[in-house]
Image (cartoon, rainbow, N blue to C red; front, side, top):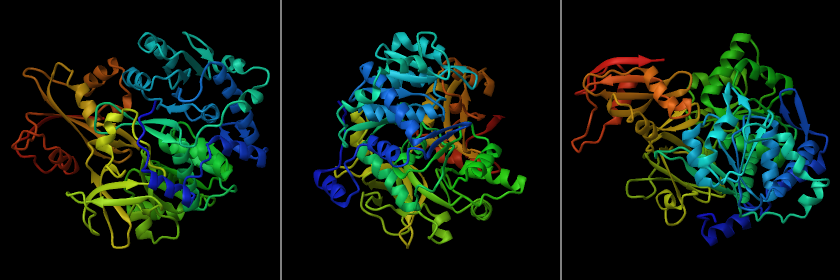
Length: 554
C-alpha cells in the first residue's frame, strides 16, 4: 500500500548490525514500562496524572475498540487533538493494532483537511469538541459528504453530536476482555509504516512523510543517548503533539526512557514556569520563540529553574545574549537540527563548547551521515555553503505521494533537505538559510507558494509575492507584497476575510501587507524575493523599481 523508499539493503543491514534498528515495534516499550514501573508517573495533563499502568490499560481498551471497528494494519487513524492525555493513549492504541497514526495540527480547517484526510484515506478521526472557541464536530460534519472513507468521527472532551461519537461511547466497543482481544492481534512488523505526518514545504499541498517503528525507535534512543536521559528525568512538552517534536517527546519518548511527560497545551510562559517548578522538569525541546518568552517570564518573576538540565532549541537562530542569559537562569541551552523527514540530524550537548552549542547546529548524530553538497552535488569543503543532505536510521521512508520521492532523495538514498549550510573546521553544521520558500513561524512551516495561490483569488490582486519577514516573537512572519488591479485597494482585514471564507488556518494569514506598484524581477521574469526579504530587514534601503505605496501590519 505504501510507496516507501527504504534504505538500500546493505545500508539497512548496517543499521541492524549496529543496533540502530532494534527491530522492536513501538508498542513493546509501553508494555515494558508498565511492567517495570506500573505505578510510576507517565503523563501529567493539568490536574490529571496517569501512571504507566494507566496508559497501558487505557490504550489496550482503546485498541480493542479500534479493532472491533475494523481498524487494523495499514489503516490510517487521524487525530486533530490538542496536547492532552487522550492523544497519548490514542497513539499507543494505534501502535497496538498495527495501524498508522496521522496527527493533524488543530489549526487546520476545511481547506487543509480535505486534502490530508482524502489523500491519507483515513478510516477514523479523533477530534476535540469546542476547542479554543471553534466547533470541530460541525467542521467534520460539513466535510462528511466529501470524505466518505472517514467512517467514524470520535469527539474527545465532548458529547457525541453531529454524526460523531463521544470518546466514552467509542470505548464501549472494547468488549468484556480488551486485553485478550489485543493479545490475539499479530505484533506489527518493525519495518511497517506506523506514522503519516504531513509537513508543509515549498509546494501548495502538504507532503505526507512516512515513518516506521524502526525509524522512530532509533530517533528516540538517539535523543536519550545524546542528552543522557533516564527514568529520573521529567520531560516538558509545549510543542503540539501533532508536530514531529511533540510526537516524539510526548507520545513516544516517555515510554522508551521510562520518564514522565508534562503536557502544556496553550503556550503561557508564566504557567510553563509554574509547571516546570511544580513537577521538577529537567528536559525539553522547543523552538527559539518559546525560549525567549520563558526567559522573559523568569526574569520578570526573578526566579530560576534549577531542575532543568537541557533546553534544546531548533528551527531558528538563538542570539548569543539570549543563550547566555537563558543558560544562567534556566538551564543549559543547546541546538538541534532536523525535520519531519529526519527529526534529529545534528545536535550538541552540554559538554560542547558554547560556540558549538549556540553558534552551530551541532554535529551529526552517528550513524546518521550528513553532507553539504556543492552545485555539482559533491561534498563541499569546510566553510563552503551548499545544500544539506542526510541519510540515517531515523530518515523517513519517503512520502505518501510517491511521485515526490524522486526529487526528495538521491539514487543512493540521501534526503535533499532544501536547507543551505556549511561545516566549520570542527565538523559542526551551521544552517545558513533555505532553498525552500517557506515561512518559519514559531516552528510552524508555512508554504509561501500556497498563500500566494490563495491570495491570487482576491479580485483586487493583480500580482502577489509572499516572503518571510523578521518578527521579534515568532521568529518570522508572513509578508505579502501585492500589486492591485487598477482602481482597487486592499487591507489586511479584507485578506483575512478572504482566507477565512476559504477555511484556511489562521496561522497562514499574512501579518504584513505591502501594496507596491511593481514586483522586482530578474531579466527572465522571476520575482526577486531576496530583494523583498532584504528590504524587510532594512526598510531604509530601496528596492530598485519598486515603490511601496501602502503598509498594513498587525
